[in-house]
Length: 335
Image (cartoon, rainbow, N blue to C red; front, side, top):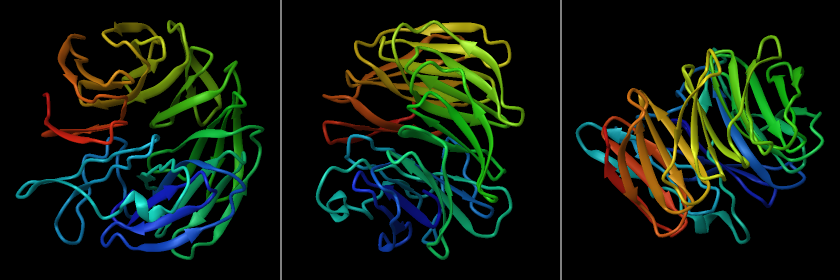
């Protein structure tokens, strides 16, 4: 999602593009041969950091959007004078019948005047779309299994994809060329996050890895989890991973040293956000736990939902959570 577009990928192989201002469907992108699992917008004029603290629309309102599908992603946008809006510009019922795994694109920019969309999924291909024309500019081939995660580097036309084939691949999305294959994980790559020229990956092999995207070199292998890793957050200083072993681990991104192990969950931790010196985590048991990364102490424990926490987002004032119970909740930011 950016100031212009809300992009939704479907298990029915289609990508829908909605206007972020009006909620109208403006484009349907076809070409994938099976379900679309991940999306990323990349633009030279609309640049949003990974934490997505806010995007102001033409009407002056800033919005949050959440999909009730099981793979929802939520973004929080707030306006100083009017508070927070949880946008209802899109209704999940508008997206057609069948299973819906909606994933919202995020924007990273490097100077190009138009916006590109990178989409990927079960057909093993990445597609690079021109959002102005709706044309597919590149089909990026190389993965041998489902692609589960994609990141576009801040300020650069470089995308990194992670797959069930156990590899990451680094692509030039302007030229449509493969730059590096990052091999080392022994199982599916489930999640990615990036900072500068580094990418952190989390895998079902119970490890995280930090990679230099420019050289393709693995900088650190981060160990300690006892089961699959489902979520990762990376801000340049810390790598944080959530696992189905019901713990969260924090590592120093420069040295690879484990700094903390957070407990208190009874289910998989699949939602993470780093915001300044605070970590927000959400679990399959419905709990949201907030930790200080200065003292490594628990700040708040919220019994947020009756079922798993499917999405969360925080800024300076508010925390928004969405759950598999179908509820979206707005909290005062636990800062």
